[in-house]
Image 1 (cartoon, rainbow, N blue to C red):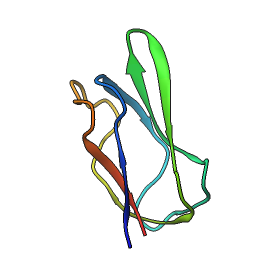
Image 2: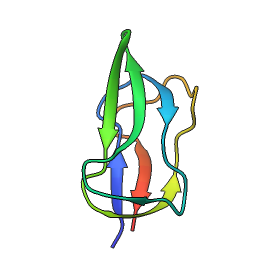
Image 3: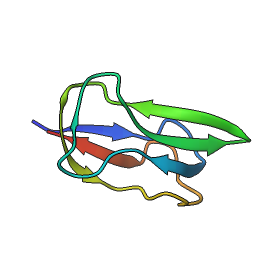
Length: 72
């Protein structure tokens, strides 16, 4: 079953730390958004393998609750 990590706020994607095929543990940071000059890290809620990444570094205007990373 896939777990979808969603953005928790609107903002810009500053850094993407994973790619498809990477193995992650629960709590690993997947990507960081910049929101009003603050960094907001988004972490894996489960362990698994990255199946898809829907955000890119430098992406601007990402909406809250958008699909960002899928973990299998």
